[in-house]
Amino acid sequence: MIRGRGQLLSDERGSTLALPPGLEVLERRPDLVIASRGCVMFRLWRATATLESLPLCESALERFSAEHARYGTLTVVERDLAPPSADVRQAAGRMMARFMEQSTNALVIEGTGFKPMAMRLAITTIHLLAPSSTPPLPFGDVKEASEWLASQFPDVNAVLLTRDVEILRAL
Image (cartoon, rainbow, N blue to C red; front, side):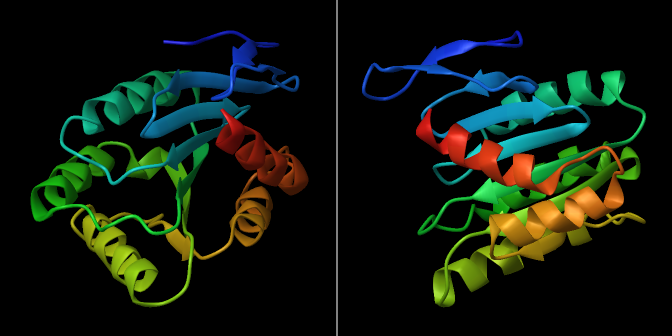
């Protein structure tokens, strides 16, 4: 696990990247980056979720929910990823059911056309299996999702959230 504020991280090309104050990388793998800023957790999916990747998310959510009575998540599924399998959707639904009541969730599935629409449907199905008073709102754009999430938390800055996602993409 990578933890600590004011982190220096290497990107894919071996260049050193200094994270801005307040942005903390919790986990970084080729398929998934998990980070936080204040009461917001980021999950940037670079590859289709698998049963092997879900325990990493669950562990991060356990730690984050223990630190925050109420928090937001900004989940970004990058373009052109295939929808997760039915097994993964069911397991993710069970996992999310544990955390939904204390979280407000924005979900970005990037792209247009059939694949992103199928992904939005798959993710919506996951959350239908985990009914909540705060179901995730699906978005096609990080800026729009950041603005909505910031409207839910008075201390959250939408511009910083949008910038943070772009920084996380570079890792």
